[in-house]
Each structure stands twice: as structure tokens, then as C-alpha cells.
Image 1 (cartoon, rainbow, N blue to C red):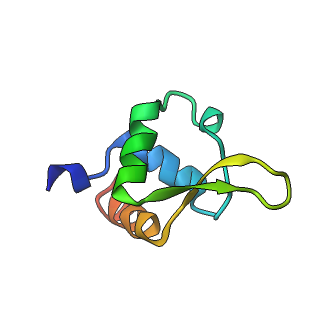
Image 2 (cartoon, rainbow, N blue to C red):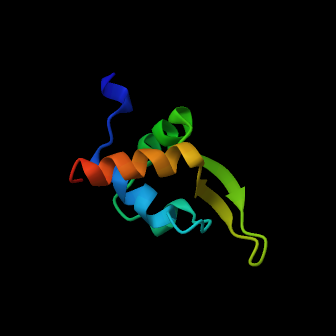
Length: 76
């Protein structure tokens, strides 16, 4: 299904979250709300709050980690 394929903006977000960090949208220059909404709908990221700093944003899910791996294998 085409919607399950990663694009470069989605890869940018997943790479930025791959260490388990919680980041807000501002961390991802050039990535808009539509991309985040798509990643949330696919279950690749989730809303989260950093326990240490109280940062509210997003973190990667296990499904997102799997999608990131597929993106790397595809050369993205």
C-alpha cells in the first residue's frame, strides 16, 4: 500500500527520534503538521513527554523503528 511507504520527511523524523528521545515539531525544520499526522496515523510515532525536562513532543514506536529499518534498507 502506497501510504505505508516512507518518504524523505518521514525518514527525517524517524531518524531524529531513533534514540528514543522526545522531540517537539520545532526540532524538525521543513517538516509540517501533515507529516506528523501521517506518522501518528501509521503508528510510527506517538505523543510523549520527556520525564527529565518536561518536553512535550513525539517519540518513535516499535512500529516506527521497523519502518525506519525498512527505509534504510531501501536507501532512504
